[in-house]
Length: 189
Image 1 (cartoon, rainbow, N blue to C red):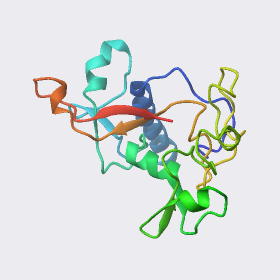
Image 2: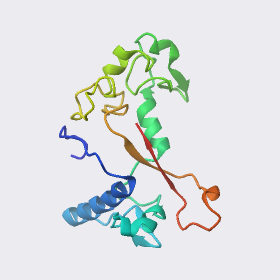
Image 3: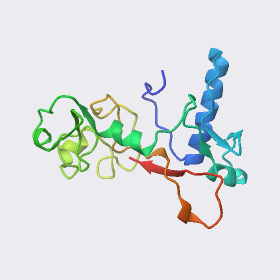
């Protein structure tokens, strides 16, 4: 199952590579399972299949089909919800139990906490339990699952590698021409 492997994480790719990989995975999944999932990323109506520098304009002008069922990157909002979700019950751990945010009958991790941590990111002991970062990683990535997961069971939401997201904010101020793409790529992590 996707996401259940503990093998080394993928690094040294850019967001364009990630978008092309999502489309390739969708096509592979369709081939293997006889399904017809629609690829998520296109440029001028064509499926985005090439992330090399010669295809730079297509990658930056790529659009996301929100109703497609194919594999895709998370939006920054989805990433944030997955990282900060705690659940319907107040956490028991101190100080998280008094600082968790209650919104719509659900508790959420405060923004100054690493995902899955029970104290602010400045509390090295609490942060070390859930994430790899400069002070504890020896300058390298680590296999997924060596630290504790967050409330949703997701590992490495705060550290180890950068996660690419597809931001759906329009950027009219970027240039004066009408851009074929309406989306900005961002990373989180």
